View 1 (cartoon, rainbow, N blue to C red):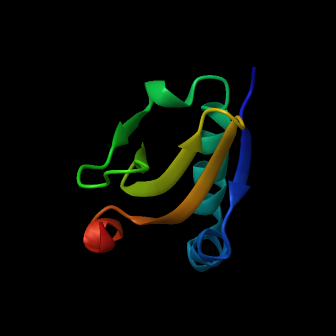
View 2 (cartoon, rainbow, N blue to C red; view 1 turned 90 degrees about the horizontal axis):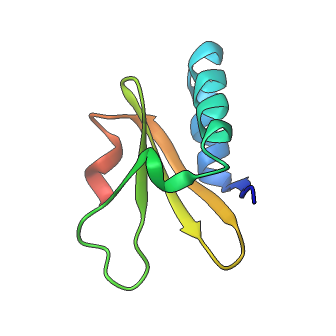
Length: 88
C-alpha cells in the first residue's frame, strides 16, 4: 500500500522560499518514496518516543514523521543540509 504525504505549514513555507526547481525536485523525491518510505530515510538520533526521519535530496533534506498505522508521511520541514538539523 502507498503512504499518503502531507506537508505542515512550516514545510510549505520552506518549499516556497526555495528555488522552484529545487522545491519541485524535493516534492518529486518525497512522492517517490511513498511505496516504501523506510528504504531512503535515516532515523534522527535523540528522538525517543516518536522518531523523526530525514530524507536526503542532493544538498537538501526533508524532516519527516512516518506513521505506519495510518500510512502517513508528514513532512515537517525542508531546507539545506547545513541548516536543517539545528533544532534536532
